[in-house]
Length: 221
Image (cartoon, rainbow, N blue to C red; front, top):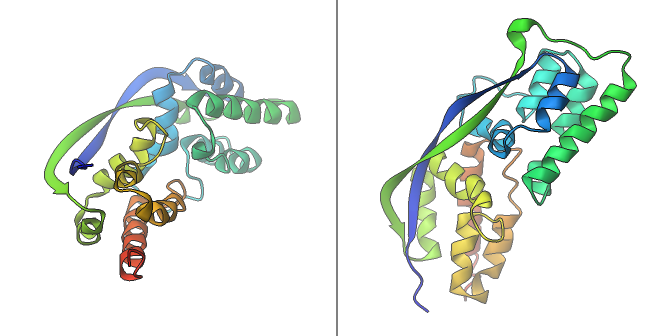
């Protein structure tokens, strides 16, 4: 079977205000029941593409807000361990968020409030896709290309792809599987890379290392 070339894309996220805000935990829970799915995705994954000037302890916007503006470290830690890739759908993730917040509300005498200028603002995003005009013909070609790929390309193919591919996997595995069983070990190695708790630069390096290890290790002999 002739496998079509892998077309490397780049992307950017355009943040769009929803007009929805929360000043305390109860308001946050109420807004979470109706907020659009793409807003939840943005608040868990969007920070990967946003400029970051530090290395935050917490990886999603809900945990960061709970820590920095509600000063509720207990809640922040519980929200921080929610790993979005562990849920089959965005609705399952939504329910987990709401359940976590409800549990915390049951524990406190009254919900903590943020300052008015530090409310949680729900944002949704629109992805803009760019054609890089670079293509890959064989899986081994990625070894020389990964160091040159932008973080936007890593986000599009390794993170955002999980919303687009039929089985919820990254574009690399989705394409490589077309080459047959001899690449199943490579796909397994890629699957072991955690996209949530690393920066895009780190993910690019991990992908590069996996491909080098696979092809230089004689796996296809």
